[in-house]
Length: 312
Image (cartoon, rainbow, N blue to C red):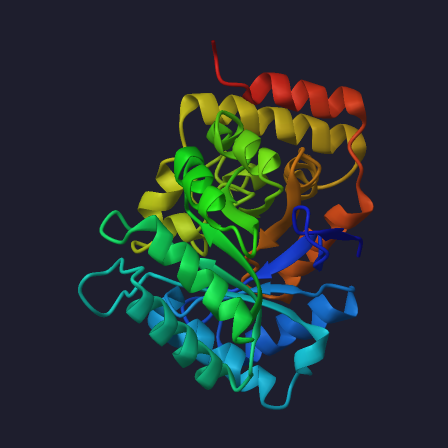
């Protein structure tokens, strides 16, 4: 596994990270233990979690693993605050709500600090200076080593980054792939300007870029799950089919998998620090880790960029 720093900070993370969004939903505790073992064996370090994932079940599974299955110091642990799926309002980034959720996360995980604490959403009802001051306070008191955001657009990131005078933002979680290149318009240039590294989520466009939906709907896929079907269907368009065909062609020519091609493409985009892989089981993770061995030839990377580019 190779490593990168998060933005202009000194925090080194594996350039493929382990996403835990499905833990407690489609991945049980035993399967999660297998994923973490395989990830660490491959040299991975960066694990992304949140109390909002699976209504807290994902965090509970990670807590169980930290109690004996894995050493705290072997992981770079990222979590977030600001989204409260079980209460109203769902998005609350007030100082009271952010710190209460952070304290609860540390207590649940049984650790004294996070490596990266992220604001999980933009809250129009909380002054941006209050959010910035809360982030700085969390670093000063030792609850987190670094700070970042998730789900912000370009102007929101720029607004908060400009207010973080004491400790800079180092990361911005963003959905980015060959089927979702909108961040290239504002968010990624903004992140680069402020020294913020992109942490990519949904790099395979809910699995669509693997080509598994090209000929129909596999029975065991996310698309066949009523709770996840909407998120998959947004990527199943005629335009997307042309892009997926390009990925399949590239994979065939390189004698590798479409999954590896799609991951390698987004991993090596300018400003990307780490790409989160939300593998359901060890078999899926093994396929994703194969991307670490792949560097796309410039001609193929350019062809994929061309076929997936937003029409002017």
